[in-house]
Length: 460
Image (cartoon, rainbow, N blue to C red; front, side, top):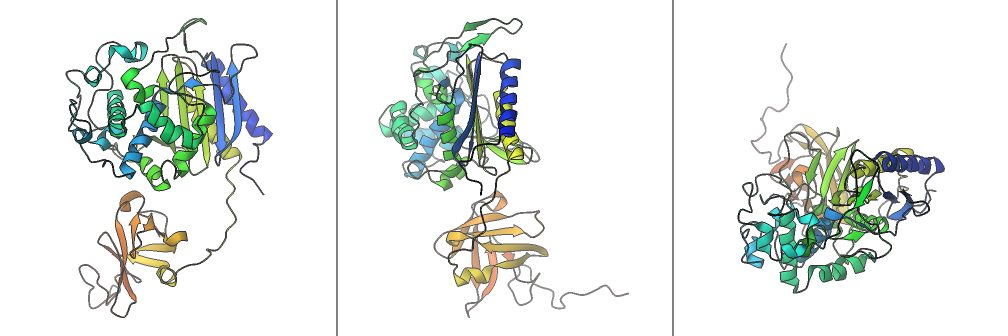
């Protein structure tokens, strides 16, 4: 039987090594380190470097840039779950006096605030944070580039505002809150706002010659919540596993699932790239990946996870440009997923099932479309089209005989079983959609009624 702790096969490890070695060599990176986790366990790490005998491992720190934003988003979601704020609250309610007070907290999390991508003045990533000591210095005189809520527009100042919001509501510096509420509970003791040895130095590699020079490592000051952190592949892997499963010491599974749902306006048609609440979402090769990329002068980082495969890939490098770290992480995930597909757990019956739920199991009809309802553990339900195409969702119980949809079209919608006076189920009501045991079942409250002559053929 395959164990989650079982090492990868030698052929898989060889393929991963080849991909990382190729990325470091062709990307001309001073160093590069990558790790893969399977079902929450670190199963592979490889480092490559131009310095003989000093290849980095999973405990060497690199600067992770905008992956910091996901940590900041987790802190905001904690405040929401505690009832301290609502995501629909305008920023002004909790952080008065900014030039962006009408923007909601959700819009800041999802980069739909319309705020500028960068700060006014000099390139903030290569200059001391002391040049921008106040939020007014970060926002400038014209902070908005687009109408609020209309489109996705990535904003570093937006996450600076969220960091200041956290400080205002907690009464402590962002870094102290981060350490107490995320890093310590999850055991991320190699993640910090300032570098801790052993750590990599940041470099710029000349685009046309094989030479390089060091990049400055500036303290970002008030902009720290948008990109300050240093971390390792081991720590980031554990953080990604948390984003998939949740941890009640930090955030519940329901809340991290909410963070992984698209929260910004989607492009026409099926989306391939979008943004959640502090997470980036990308679809490709039949899987959906959640995570975030990051960069600051001298460093690039990628953190990506596939819930379907139970896999996480982390890629870190210490150069301003070169290896495509996000594409590298995707390839590492694909190599493992295809070479060693996840072994499903053995089927086991539920320990118990309420008879009322069992009575709901089986086929239901919305008009002439066939759906199947399946009871799950802990009172949950799944309703899905029989043919595999169309609207379906899992549903969590509300404790009052109703259920709330978790995905897709029915996310947030309420499902209830409507009963006759004798207690038998007449139909299911899902957000005003009626599901009956027979298509357009006679004697049931079908919206619009049922033709009294019923089904018929076409006379010859």
